[in-house]
Length: 190
Image 1 (cartoon, rainbow, N blue to C red):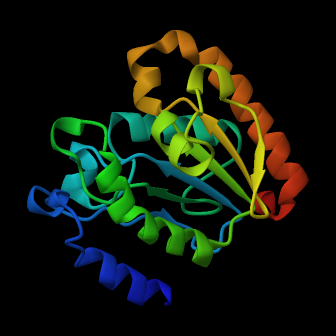
Image 2 (cartoon, rainbow, N blue to C red):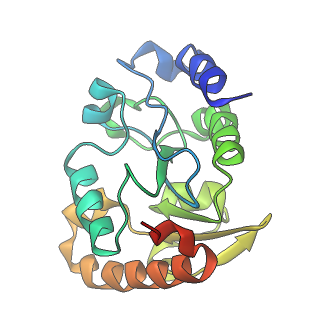
């Protein structure tokens, strides 16, 4: 399946109850051939309204954070979520919803073919890295699975709620930048 086919199929998805309450499917955004991919848990209200991932307050913080390490959505990374529709009241997606949606993300990962995937928050990390992943203990560590390097940082929304986590997230970002330079230096090519 190519990008256009995948997007068209995903936009029609009715695999779980989230389709009943969504305004828009939030498919993904960015450079479809990027070596770096970011994955969050699911869309919030602003994302549901626009159909784009990470465009609310948390998304703006993420954009600002990634500028620090020379990452720009329009130039050198792709971003998506575990679930493509907003869970009501921004609750965590259920296991059933994650399972109904994960194939969309797997196909996106296959098409992007990233060398590095950065999980944004606990939920994405437990789905993609390890079900027992503890964000407070394991953030910033690197893991290798199926030829892809994974890491996780605190979700930007968590940083808005608890700014005391920002210094350690800055350290994680600098480690991610070093890993990008090692794994995929083409990310920073002009």
